[in-house]
Amino acid sequence: MGIVIDDITTADIPHYLEFLRAGFGGPLSDLGTDLGFVSRILRGLLCARGAPLRAVKRIAGYEAFVLIARHAGRPIGCLTVVGRKSPSHTGVYVIPEFRGQGIASRLIETAVNRPRHAGYVESHA
Image (cartoon, rainbow, N blue to C red; front, side, top):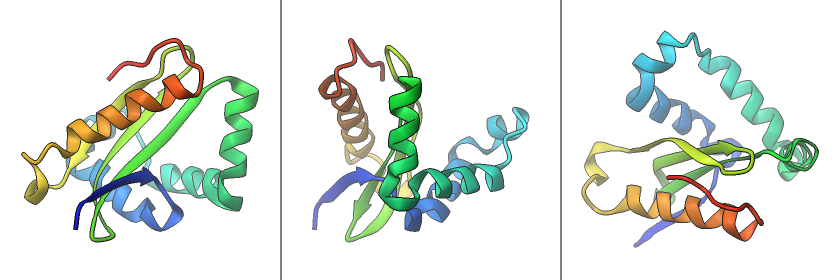
């Protein structure tokens, strides 16, 4: 079975938080990031099939999304993108057993192409 890349769902949030801890725990901690708060915000933005997130994007003109890479339905990696005129990714993570297979590159390629299709001038990986 191949790798599938799609948007984060509420069911993915615990995996996403684990990916953040594993890949970025030190820097996030240094910044005072509360992952419990991140979880609550994500759940709020993703409820009602993402309607709150779409509203924020429309009102603020801000692009924000999380991509999840899956193998056989299992989340194995993520990439987060935020920004206004030229969105950029804030981090990519793939679990160790799936590294070296081009998954991070696929996440980045998917992320770079999405803002272009949404009408942004450019995006940065």
